[in-house]
Length: 627
Image (cartoon, rainbow, N blue to C red):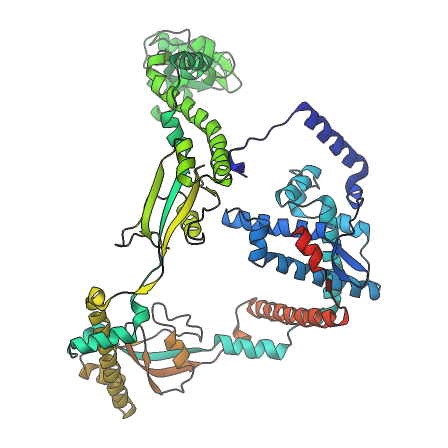
């Protein structure tokens, strides 16, 4: 636990052991991974195929590690069991055992060589040169909590299962007629004419009476539920708060300043103008011209073909110049011009345009910065110890208040917060530590209990206690009267819009053109782009239009309700899809998708059938003992 601030250590003993491990692999290769013991604590039995608790545990820890990486939260074995993860792992491994038994009876074998090749070919285990890396293999298994033996067994079972599946599902290929029919179904398009009536435009609806409002509130109580509220107390440990309280004596600051002195020194820099020549004679000719008083830029243009933008080198330090150029250039005074100097790039002439002397920031200048850095480093060292003391104190039975006091850490309280991170008056909480994890813990922890440690991405550690829980309740009518009234009016506006839309639809059904019907109501009509049955092509229009359109014949009229209004729709055109005109690769992609779906169905049926032919025995006593 608290891995985010633990440092990795390495001693000469570890390095020697690691070197021996690498050497042994160099001699024996992947083959050593097939040596290992077994255990008699069997969880799953399928005929003579047995899966011990150790292998189940490794698979479970691997799944837990995956969840931890995905959600960034510690999950214990007990929590995994409560979430049903252990049952899922056991069921999956039982299926593996069934396939192993079936493969054995059918004479299907997986050799050690096949497993070695599969492991060596796994991209996750390859080093920088693209070949199998023992180091990468070990590190990858360690990251998910698996042993080599456990991984080898898992790989063997997976290869066996794949062999059985591949042999069984080789014929799972979608026939041409199915591809043709489904392509036509999915890619058929339709075009419709529309009139839109916005609910908000219906302003002449009757105002509700007080009795109607009260009855609506009573009939729709779920609309007016106050959320669950929780009050919590919590302690947060951060490096920043510890650093603010950490005092660093001046003598320590001065020692650290002296140790870091080189980092506070800024070397001398110079602004230079430079000419570059490919041969010495040209460089000497330019030097003579400059000695005679000619302009540097003019000589550079005439003899080196260099314009003004090619001459300047700003802020150059001595080390920036190759070879011995630095010594020669930095020996010149400001305004001085060098002799022709040779480097791998050719012959140079330099002029010193400006000199910025070397500087060193004094102790007084860097005192506060240095104090902050050292306090932060000290705080990080203290943080791990304090987080452990926080956990140990609570585990010993001390209250959150007592533990906070012993650590001299502030105890904060939040009253009536919601699951979405708001106060009772709707104000958003903006200073929560690790907000998502904090709120999740606050609403999963039992009242009166403390949460597990919540680790923030900023290195903080928080423990909270749920002080009180207020269950969801219907808000009193008087407190939500205005909202109830607006809801009643919204329903009446929607009903008025629907009635008006149905009247316009009747006109169109009677032979009135949709544009004329719209005009008579002071509205306008529009034609959609071609769209598919899943709504592609409708852009910002509701998908319910597609559902309705694909139930209509050409010329048919229908009123379609939406969240903000009503649509009068006339189906204008049906555009069938032709597989012969499909885009390149579209039919192959569809065939592959269908074949995969058929394969999944066949696999599910095969698994169910094999589970009947090969009964699975699961030892619950072993599960309870180990998990």
